[in-house]
Length: 125
Image (cartoon, rainbow, N blue to C red; front, side, top):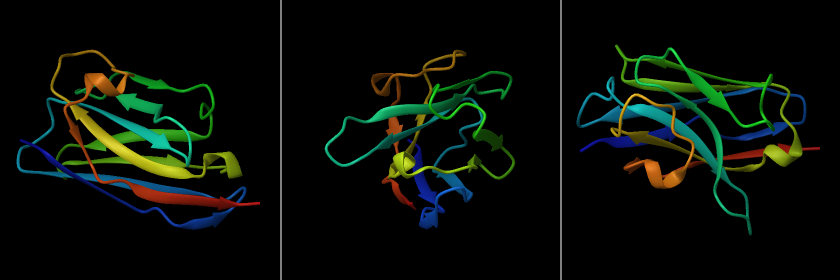
């Protein structure tokens, strides 16, 4: 069992930056694919980015390519999401998720077994 806790969300102006953290406890998730998803009010949860268990492969949603960067520090059992050039449309609750499924970079929520509680990111125009 893995417990995930996100942090770092807050109100920021458009064009600003934030770094979200996803800390794992209960079991090391160095063998897990970890992804970030987000959900805006009235919308479905959408994929943002994922990183494979070894950090060798990442996949980004087109909407965040070139602005967001995912990284992992398995020594700290933490995955980070650096978000730059934020836009009002990035406003959402951001969730991290872990998948013990295998070596691939998974992009669908159904492929993830463990989820955090979410952290709110609000970007003002």
